[in-house]
Length: 209
Image (cartoon, rainbow, N blue to C red):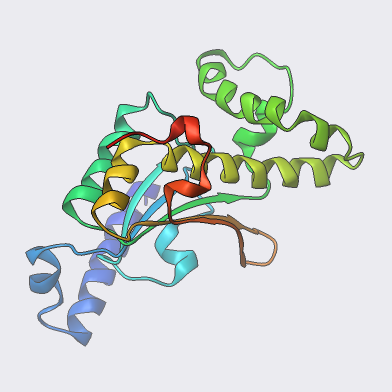
């Protein structure tokens, strides 16, 4: 049997299992989505949002890209963000990175990876910004792990710099922004940052709304 056929069979088994527990499951699922969380995660296949948070379909609105980046020119990300905040009214936005991230590792070196160089440059900028701290870490694994954390930290701050988030804060108390890092070796999530108001970002990035 071809590998992709197994996925289709798995889908049938999953659907049948859901119906065996609740005959109305898919009727309710199809009606609407009201997720409380927006997840911005890495595209790495080992870090599925619903799996590692033990949540169900409909609980988490998900966007994933290489190294869980929030880039101010990325219309894909910004479209997801605007929809999540303005239409779905999510209360929490989580940027979740993970240790042993291939994108972060690639950005630490000087190899030419072609097109993805353009994307990895955003992580190199994070490295450059924190070069003094990172340069003081002799152990390469510890340095790698720290850059993963710093990258998450910077991406959460990038969220706070958007007018999408600042408009939402002006109109209410949500969303809260969270920075997490998933450890592939333990299965546990480390919280590295929380932001819930524009006062927590540099004044130059605060808009007069």
